[in-house]
Length: 130
Ligand SMILES: [Zn+2]
Image (cartoon, rainbow, N blue to C red):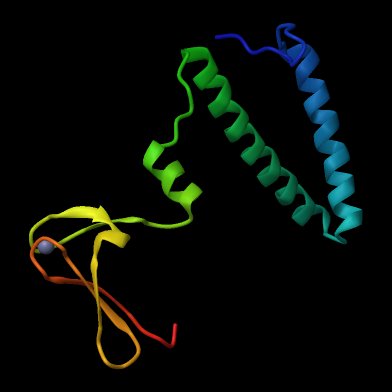
């Protein structure tokens, strides 16, 4: 497995290493003076920042090298795109469907009960104060 720079040239330690060390030193001085940290605290901050960057970069480099893609479950994307859960499952009869298919019945307090259209079991409840 070989690392590459953004321009496609192979990434090698004797060029990349000193650059990283230089970057670390600049970051160390930057953290030290911009956040008023002690040298020890600045060193820890730089180490953490580099560790996170290396972990992220390493993960993507490894995924690239092995030809795998980073996949998020489609369900998660769809759910987050819609801004919430739209499908429900009845715990009683395992009917599944959108919230709009539920039978809505006022409960007298200004709220409403939502029941399963298949077996009538109450699935959810809304309150007017919401
Ligand atoms: Zn049901």
